[in-house]
Image 1 (cartoon, rainbow, N blue to C red):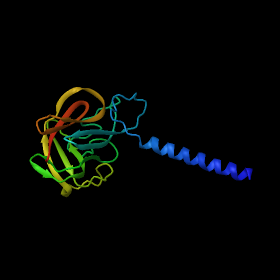
Image 2 (tube, rainbow, N blue to C red):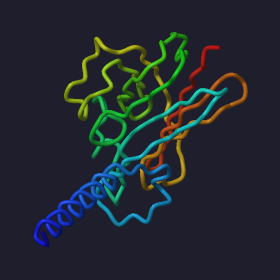
Image 3 (cartoon, one colour):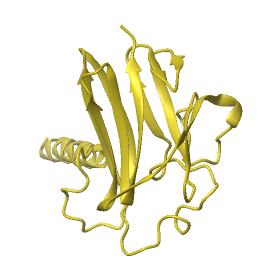
Image 4 (cartoon, rainbow, N blue to C red):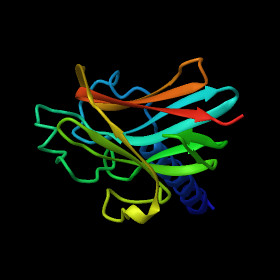
Length: 189
């Protein structure tokens, strides 16, 4: 009887340990630049906003600069990038929205970019479940926008921001290293 009790106790303890480890892996950081940066890994991050009662979520992995050359180095110019690390960055909106004059149905999409020295292309793509840009296919693009990057103060970890402009427009900013790109979305009523 004692052996069975200890075996049951061991099974329960193992289950709790595995569950705790899985939870830790899935933790999401809402401001990766406030985290003490002790890891060389990209931090699983999320930007969330509620605009007019509807949520907008951006899931991404936040890499750090770590004294590396980012633009034209780690992130090459002229190539499709997941605009984060690991899996494609996802944009999830619960109602139809407009980007660059194009109406897009509610749902989950991937955000890709093609960085350039003086101009970037922001891409919203139907295939959100992708690893890096290895499965990216231009035929699945919903919309492409040309954006001019702006200089910004140094930001160690890539971060997304969602800002309600109170004018009917919502701005999505991507900030990393010493650059910022921004584009607007409009939620449909």
